[in-house]
Amino acid sequence: MINDNFFFFLKFKNDVRFFYDSLPLSQALKLMKKHGYSAVPVVSRSGVYLGSVSEGDFLWFLLEHGNDEKALENHTISELIREGFMPAAPNTISFEDLLAISLNQNYVPIVDDRNIFIGIVTRQAILNYFLESRRSLSLSPKMIELERYEKSLAAKSLHV
Image (cartoon, rainbow, N blue to C red; front, side, top):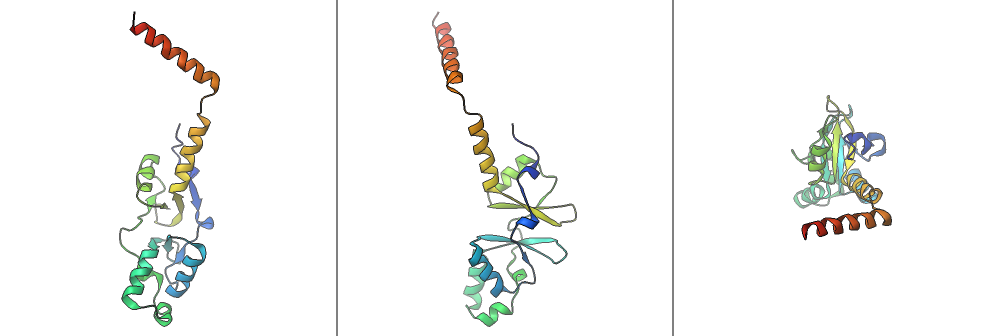
């Protein structure tokens, strides 16, 4: 049975790489490259989730402003946040809704009722859960034999 508590999948803020909105783009770009992330949550100094930024956001900025180190130092990560990109889910979200959102993004940011960022649920964590569940439900050879026997009995009863 599926665990309806999303906290089972939650990677807490302390274990998540995120950017503060005041981080210069030059530093953010270096961190994205160093850690190999394709998207990163952005929060205010007070902990409010503001959005997420992706590699594509950096690419579009560089195409518009050039790859000038000075320009990258004079702009902050907050300028890259796109409205509606990777919206946060409340900590009251149902597992079904969390699953639906995760189909369209690599992670789902989770916030409390004050919009304070508390962590993320990754699509990978959800898929691993289903994979492990499937493995644990694998039938033993005896169960497979019993299932075949029941099917053969049902087939014989149809031919009577």
